[in-house]
Image 1: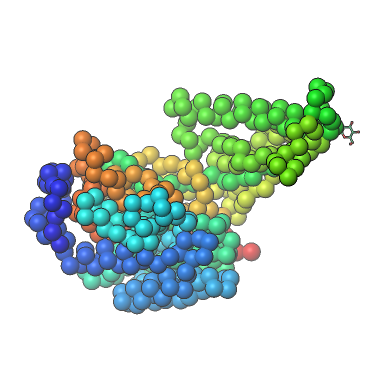
Image 2 (image 1 turned 30 degrees about the horizontal axis):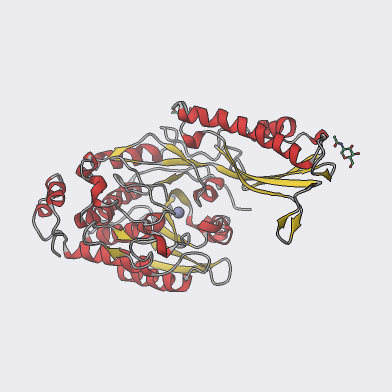
Amino acid sequence: MSLPSSSHLTRSFLLSLLFTSIAASASAFSDDEEVQIHHFQQYLRIRTAHPDPDYSAAASFLLSLAHSIGLQTLTLEFSPNKPLLLLTWPGSEPSLPSILLNSHIDSVPAEPDKWVHPPFSATRDPHTGRIYARGAQDDKCLAIQYLEAIRSLKRSGFSPLRSVHISLVPDEEIGGADGAEKFARSEEFRKLNVGLVLDEGQASPTDEFRIFYADRSPWRLFVKATGSPGHGSRMYDGTAIEKLMDCAEAIARFRDSQFDMVKAGISPASEVISINPVYMKAGTPSPSGFVMNVQPSEAEMGFDLRLPPTVDPEQLKERINNEWVPSFKNMSYKLLQKGPIKDCNGKFLITLTNESNPWWPVFEKAVISSGKKLAKPEILSSTTDARFMREMGIPTFGFSPMANTPILLHDHNEGWLRPAQSWASKEEFSGEGGMSIESVRTAIARSCAKVGSWIGKFSTVAVYGYNTCEPE
Ligand SMILES: *[C@@H]1O[C@H](CO)[C@@H](O)[C@H](O)[C@H]1NC(C)=O
Ligand SMILES: *[C@@H]1O[C@H](CO)[C@@H](O)[C@H](O)[C@H]1NC(C)=O
Ligand SMILES: [Zn+2]
């Protein structure tokens, strides 16, 4: 493997790498690292994007990788043609609560014409060093990190005290109902006696790894107004659209109050209630569009609402009833509340990041002792499969170890790294990211090593008993 020719930047990047001396030489990758990168590319080339994810190809690939490492494998199917792979590295004391490393196989669709390289080519761009592929960050990197980390650990002779499991699950991007949700409630899951789950987080544009201890709950609010229909020329009170506009204005004021706190730096975006209009449905259709001289008797609007786990949902419901959708105005609403607010022990769906959670100090020390920085724990703005594990009362961290990496999940040109130009004067260069091909090693292979040392620490530390729940 030779260096990209462009490369003053590459060289300064290399020189800034503290951790290895071979990095400064021209042959940047060891054979093992090349293999890791190749596995990553192979996985990315399997089209597991919705709406038609090729789960069977992904499953055979992942199973063969697992077999090559010597892991036990089990294929579960909670819904036809949606395999869920459970891979196990048994510990020497399998009665201890185990570690579960979770990653979803599917990804969101891509619009190929908006990409510089085809989204399923996993092209390793010689100029930027970036591997372009849908799913690179979200979250095929995780499966490869888990597997390759375990491969290295096994090779080094390490043997875990507690069992380590990997679950590779379908359908996260469409809600997880046939994947992690059924899995977390299954007898198979209960038998794993899981003590800690690591699931996906997000890339970090700085040198601090990000860690997520809760997801926001997604709600859907559908508001419907009815009113007197009438001629478009008449001004009168109580039309459906007028009422709906009042509602939208009230919601907009609330939205501002939340967003202002974010803009003022008082709250991170994930810790406020977000609400955004996502559709409007009104008007009387005509062959050429809409009838323009009739004020319709019905109008409807939909909102995406996200609640941090610290918010009291009853208070929000009161606000909807009293301010947004007062029933005396002949308006009605439907609230689709996805998933519970509390876990099976009646606690908020939050994984503690302090000494009360015996896994936390282990996690924190594992990252810091490997010379890395950890950002202040965050709530994830969106939702992941982690919530199903938290619902079972199991501590679950969202953690995708990608530092100095722009957040590109669901974006065009999803990959590890941003184009060269925009990196030129950035101190990010010195970190684990950067733009050269070498950075692929830092991002993939090196993170495999890190993940390996963390898994090692988790699996040997003595953490006993955590209050988990029985499945229904
Ligand atoms: C609400 O609807 C009822 C029944 O259609 C009607 O009698 C009433 O006048 C309406 N009230 C308002 C405020 O529009
Ligand atoms: C950890 O955080 C929780 C929630 O904020 C709190 O109730 C608990 O007392 C904290 N424990 C310690 C040891 O600080
Ligand atoms: Zn994801």
